[in-house]
Amino acid sequence: MYIRGSFFPILVAAGMATLNVSAALFAEHEICIFGNDVLRKKAEPIKKFDDALKQRVERMFRVMKATGDGVGLAAPQIGCSEQLVVAQVKMPTLPEDFPEEQKEALQKEISGLSKMIELTDHTGKATTFDDIVQFGRFAFANPVWKPVGDTKAPSREACLSLPGIMAKVPRYKKIVLNFQDLDGHPYTLQCDGLLAQIIQHETDHLNGILYVDHISDLCVVGEMPIWEVFPELYEQMKALKDEVLTKNKVEESRQEAEQEGREFKSSEKTFWISEKNKEKALAIIGKIGGEDHMFDYDTLLPQSETANNAVEAKSEAK
Image (cartoon, rainbow, N blue to C red):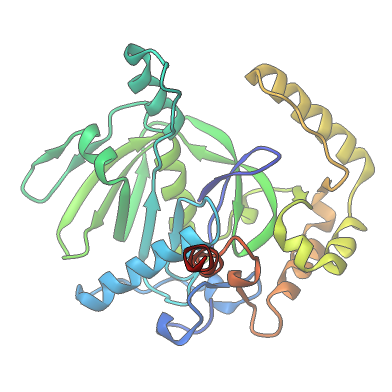
C-alpha cells in the first residue's frame, strides 16, 4: 500500500496467523507482524462468493483507513489465508485556481493512472477512467498478473507487517491482471503506475512473499509512531546501522530530492541497515507483535479509526 511518509512516499502493505482462520476472531484493526506463519503460506483460492466475503472486504478497507494513508491490503495480513486483495487509489486534491486543462493529466500522473486503465468484464464491456475515479476502490479475488514488457522501475515500499522500515523495490511498470469480482465474475485489467505497484506488492503476500525478499539493505524511519510505542526496540535497531551505508544513502536521497524538485529533510532517526544485518533487523520487528506476532494498530493513537471516532463523539458532546 502506498502512503506519504514524513521522509518520502512509500508503498505499504499489512498481515496474521493460522490457515483459513476467520478474521472475525481477531481485533478489528489487528495486523499480522513479521514472524507470523500466515505471512509465509500460499493462500487458498476463493471458491465461495457470498456475503461473508463482502464483509471481509469491508473490514479490510476499514483496517486500511485506521492504519493511516495506505491504499492496499492482502487478506493474509488480517489472518485470512485466501487469495483476496483490496486497493484504493485516491485522487489528489488540487488548488482551486489550478488550470482546468492541466488538472486531469496531473491527477492521473500523481495517482499512478498516467495511462488509461483498460478493464474488461466477462461480457466484454469496458470501463472508463472516470468510472474508476468515481469509486476508487478495487477488490480482487484470485488475482493473477503478468507483466506487459520488461520495463521495471524502483519504488519505495513499506509494509504494515514490517512496521518502521522501507526499501526500494523494482516493479514492472505495466501489468495485465486476471481476477474475479465479489460475485465471482471474471475480469481482465491492464494498468500501470501506482495501481500496478500495489497489485504486485499485495499479490506477493498471497504467495508467502514479502517485499524485503526482493531487496538487500533497509531504511529505518524512527519518526513512524511504531517506534514511539516501542522505543527500546528502535534503539536495538539503531545499533545495527551501518555508518558508511547511512552516509551514502543520505546523499543518494538528497540527490533524488533535487532531481524531483522537492525539499530534502534529513533526520537523525532515519538510517539504513546493510544486507548483513537485515535478518537481525527483521527479528527485532517480529518482537513488536509479541509471541503471537500480531499488532493492534488501535494502540497508535490518534491514528486509529476508534480514536478518531472518540474525538468526534467528545466534540459533539460539547
